[in-house]
Image 1 (tube, rainbow, N blue to C red):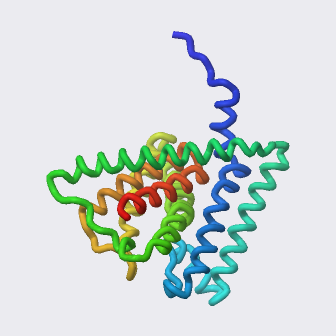
Image 2 (cartoon, helix red, strand yellow):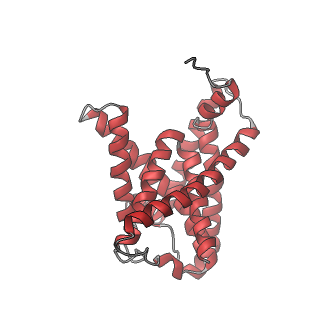
Image 3 (cartoon, helix red, strand yellow):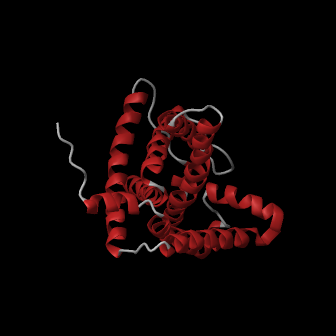
Length: 250
């Protein structure tokens, strides 16, 4: 059978959407929206933030005190800017249409993930119990939107970029595994840790087999997506996925 290569435009989108100039710039509005909403709602929520956000910034708070979040934000923006500028300086252009395609892809993936994760979780849990109510559902609607946006950005930064990236590296470096074995190890390990994270802290949920399984399955989906499609699309897919669940649950 004769194999025909993908058209150049499709190859270019698949490759370019993972590049820093697209992936990181695509995720930047999530950072801005989340931080603006968190600041606007600060008086009502008492400084409530997404748990991954708090975890990432806690190290900087211990070192820099009250200026820790500002230092973290400056370093994050600085790193994003450096990576994007370095990418552009290689002579690579930015096509606005690519961002439109990336958002469309993220929206479709969020809808697909919502269906697939729900079906798989229902099949796994059918002999046991349904998914328990999340603690975040007791928050007001604007706060839940803010937390959902933060989940897309900071949970993907913590659990995919840092954790899955470290597990991928560890599988290759310490165990000598190839890309496939390391990818499976990082996907499954990252998913279990991602699910367990939701039961830690004062706003963590009560440990429940249903919600743990649901989140572990979602973690597998997001970890695999990050390995295949990169940070930007995964962050937006996660944020839109959470927002869709939020709208469905009311």
